[in-house]
Length: 356
Length: 159
Image 1 (tube, rainbow over the protein chains, first blue to last red):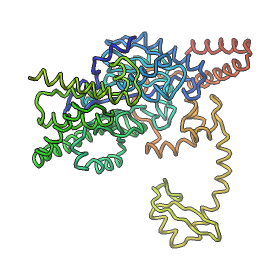
Image 2: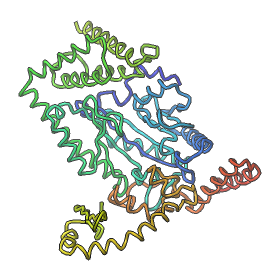
Image 3: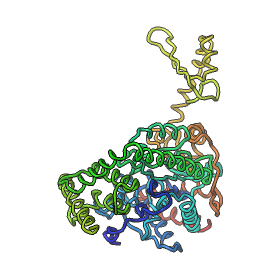
Image 4: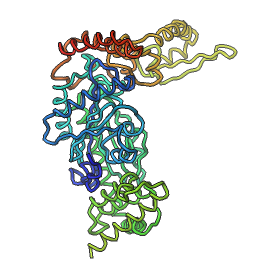
C-alpha cells in the first residue's frame, strides 16, 4: 500500500463534522486482546511473534467487513512512514518507534478502524469517530471483535475476563477516550480544577498522543482507567455523562469570553492568523498553539469564512512526517521549521485569495 | 495503600523511632491510627512480628515462576508486564491485591467471548508445548522439535 495516497485526506478523526464538533475532535475506543496459549509480545521470541503475526494477519484477511482492512508490515516501513501513521493516529508511538520485530497495523480507507498486531498485546483493535460518538464506536468495535473471535481463540479467564500483558488493562480490555478542544477552560485556568475532579472518579486526562504526552494546542483526551469490574456499557455511560458536563463548562467559559473581552479575543485571533501567515520559521508546538486560537476564533465567529476543517488540515499537514512527505524530501529540525512556515504562508495566502 | 490492620484506606503514615537508628513505618486508617496512638507499643509489636515472615514470603515469591512461560514474579514486578495468559493463575494470590488496588475490583463484568475457550487445561498444555518447542529449537534438537510441533498441531486441531 502506498501511504502517500492518504496525504490529501483528513481521515476520520479530523473529519471535523461529528456530533458536538465545536469542542469534541474525536472519539476512540480500543480493545486489548491476546491469543490463548501464546506468550505475550514482550516475552515472545522473534519466531513466536512471526507466528502470531501470521495467524492474525490471516484472520484479518478473511474478515467479511464493509470496509476492507489493509495490512501494513511496520517492521518494513521507513522511519518517516512510521511517524506518518502515528501522526494520523492509526498506530501507537510504542508500535511505531519503541517495539521491534514482526509487527503491523491494518486499517481501512476511511481511517476509522485499525488493528495493531504485536503491540504490548497481540491485538489492539481501535475504532475512531469524528465528534462524540461512543455508542457508534462501541457498536463497530464490538462487531469487529466478534468477527475476529470466530477466527482466533482469545485468552479469556472466567474471573479476570480478557487477559492482557499489563494488569491495568485486564477485564474488558477497553479504553474509551474522547478528544476535546478546551481553549476557554485553559484560558480561565479552570481546567486544572476540572482534571482533579476527574481523577477522583477514575478518569484519566492525557495529551494528544496518549500516555505520557503533554497537552498541546489545548487538546485533551479523557479516558477510563478501570477495566475490571465495570461493564463496557457502564464505563461508556460514565464517560458520556462527564463529557456532557465538560461541554457545558467549556461553552459557558466561551460565552463569558465573548461577553467580557471580545475585543481582546478578536485581537488575539487576528495576531494568531497574522503570525501563521507571515512567520519564516515556526515550530510545530507554536503552530499548534496558534491553530488552537484560530479554531476558537472560528467557533466564536470572530473570523469570517475560514472553515474549521481547514484548521484540521493545517494541523495535520504541519506535523513532522506529513510536512516531509508534502515537501518530498527529508528535513532536519531547522529545515522543518522553515518548511512549515512556508507551507502555512502559502496556504493562508491561497485561502485569502479565494475569499476575495 | 491499605491500612495494615483493617481493609480500609490508610490515611495515617506513622514512623515510630524504636531507638538509635531504628525506625518502623506504619500505614493505618484513621480509626486504627487513633487506637495505635493510644497504645503505640502493643500495636507496633503486632505489626513488627510480621516483617520477618513477610521477607521470607517475598524472596520465595520473587523466585516462583510460571510453569507455562517461565517468567519469575520478580520480573513482572520490575517490568510491570506479565509473560503469558497463564500468569494470571500462576500468580493469582499475588495479583489479586494488585488488581483490587488498580481497579477496585477483582471480578470481570461485561463482554465474554461468544465461543468460550474450550478447556483451559488444553491451553496450558499448549503453552507448555510451545515453550518446550522454543527450547528444543534453541538447542538445535530438531527431532524433538518436530515431535513437539506435531503434538501442538494435533492439539490445535482438536480445539
